[in-house]
Image 1 (spheres, helix red, strand yellow):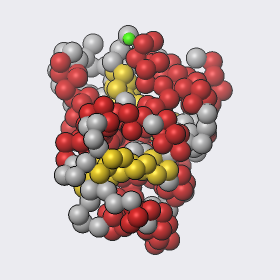
Image 2 (spheres, protein in one colour):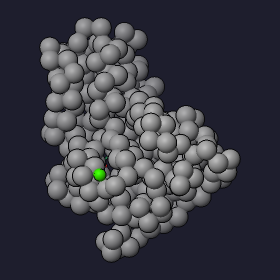
Image 3 (cartoon, helix red, strand yellow):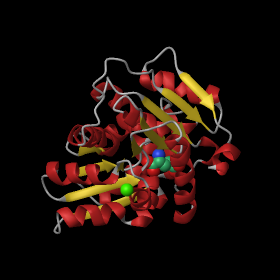
Image 4 (cartoon, helix red, strand yellow):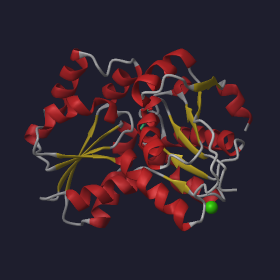
Length: 271
Ligand code: DGL
Ligand code: CA
């Protein structure tokens, strides 16, 4: 039924940057999200391990009767999108293709940068998605794992995080780009620091945000948009600590009340 929820997953609060956009663009849809904070970070993990975790979470979300699944995690997308698309009967959408398409569209000089986790950079998923669309584009990838740690530690407002971002993005002084893809869903929480580090001339692309437009179009094409008037409040799950998850989620989503529950990783193991 079209009133079924859309499922979103990430390794942590990064996926909330996609949820924030989904709440804006799809106000009539019910949303269920799981952040696998007990096993974060995914970036340094082997691809097979990330794929295993993502399939477990997909099983949990399918039991919440989701009508579509969004991998609101670049590392998960790189590791498991094809597997899940083959395995599941519902639509499964990742965040890498839409970010790549937008970057190629907006880039003025085809010098495109990507910041992401080690897993996403090592996978070359962005390099292949972009060069498929723009064979002559030059692509500079930079792994910024410390950015994930800073966000999950609720330090995305801190001055020293601003300095960390400035220091790490110095890399692009020597490798100039005209467009930078935020290829990790955690990174939009650092957008102000990234903007000041990159300067006003570089276009920033938020892959997660771009993906919501693709999800909306896909649901419309498949006749899956919720036509009934009622939609549930968003439901959040974390395999980590509910309080620390809620603190960041309330701040980022600007919601005073949140429906957050803990899911033990063991429970996911059963699926
Ligand atoms: N937020 C995830 C991404 O978009 C991964 C962060 C992590 O667990 O390393 O890649
Ligand atoms: Ca399928």
